Image (cartoon, rainbow, N blue to C red):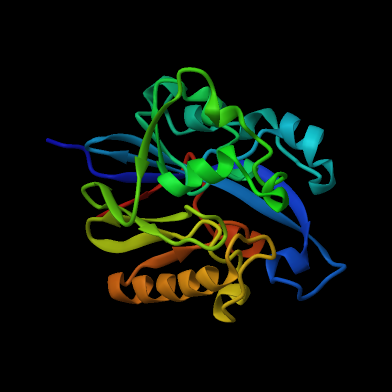
Length: 253
């Protein structure tokens, strides 16, 4: 009998940015500490990891102003162990995008295939000048890395849906996970950081295409309604404190 799908949120620590970067030019001068996490999905077709957090040493070297906090227990290898797995167990890494706080653990997952939007890998390898810091971590592009490039919306495995939601970056993906007997889980990654920003169609201050970004916020709203999905915010400390974190998990009935 196939295993039922289970979903763990893996704690990667936290960073600090100004409020104006969360709500695009609104609230300047107010530093905010925000969480970073990854999404691990045990699925009948394999073990999938959506995003991989940040690497503290890299952030301290190149973006020390974001004041990274990450313990040894908050690294990807330790968090996988907390959920009962090792780095070699991960079959697929899916990066919503390749900003440093979403790909810092890729380098540990050398057996996995990395799934990306085709526009994202091009942007990360040849970033525009204003994107260089966002794409500061290049360790995802390690020798031997195996990539599977995607375009448009994709059902990666039964009940694992990637929706193309560009704006924050050129090839940004959001993830919806279907679970038997309960509402699907919708992870919008960096389409909007907080519930307040989402409600006002406010994207993050850092973005590639603000028009596409607003349309992606509205698309998430439509998807959530269509699927009757529970939305998970990536970088909001208040909602994060209400989520189940590994070793606890989400599962169907």
